[in-house]
Length: 148
Image (tube, rainbow, N blue to C red; front, side, top):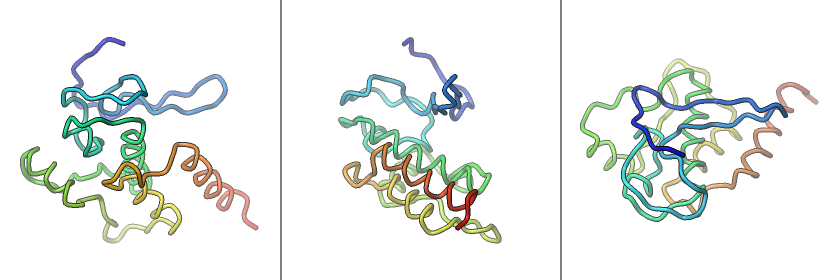
């Protein structure tokens, strides 16, 4: 995969022939194995271990997924209200700064809100796996589309 500079692009959604959605171009695209590297990508989606250039794995993608879930629910760009330098932003994220409920907006169902929070936990070990995220999203979808 070739490296490239990203300009005003947050992510790409791709639909496979099997109707599987893939989120791509979030932060840095590299092998799933533990890696470290230079700071690159879209900062609002970056897990703390990525912007600190620490060893990281697929749990960094789960962090990005949590931020994306918030954006999908509220229909807004996460952290749009933040004013300051990237250094200030990263420090704030290290201190637990995450997107919150939008005033006047409909709050997400508790299971979705909990999943968002688990996904963007500062500790990668506390983030759920992609499989657990898939199971939880499926349950939420079925509860809405196929009510009991």
